[in-house]
Image 1: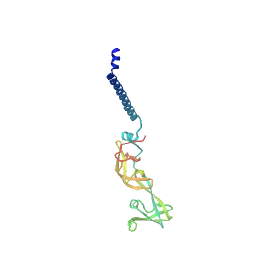
Image 2 (image 1 turned 120 degrees about the vertical axis):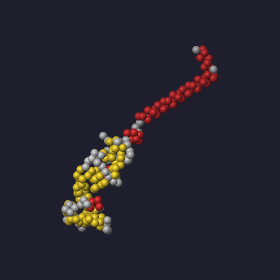
Image 3 (image 1 turned 180 degrees about the vertical axis):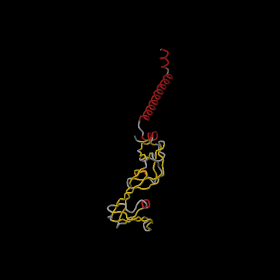
Image 4 (image 1 turned 135 degrees about the horizontal axis):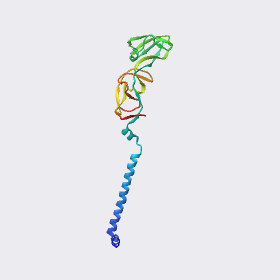
Length: 199
């Protein structure tokens, strides 16, 4: 004990001992800081990290071909309306429009408007809907963007080009590009992004 006491009374030993204590305390603080940071990183929820690791949670629609109805809006004035090419071959004489019927649908473009002329009988002027029966994949209108839908493929959103046979304000009828059982993503995500289906 006397040896230790005499050693600690030596100025060089006191200095060395003081430095050793300071270094030990500093290392303990660094160690605690690193451990707290690691624990915080593991326990604090980070949505960006969660999306990258597990994928964005998405809502989906399972594609199933069926028969359905699309409401085609046509603006009639003096029993005459103009429609685009996508609807020209879907309208026929005898179809009901409001309180009247379709009389004829031109097979040639109107050169002034670039549209097809639809003639009606007994229909009041204004905007009316014509119900058209179609067969295809009926999806919410917001799911199809620029003739492209996103489908789930091995937890990744994959873009698919589709052909639209008809649409109204709420629904799009897709005639090709997807198949029965395809899982169409209805949430807003990007192609190539990792996703998981909302339960």
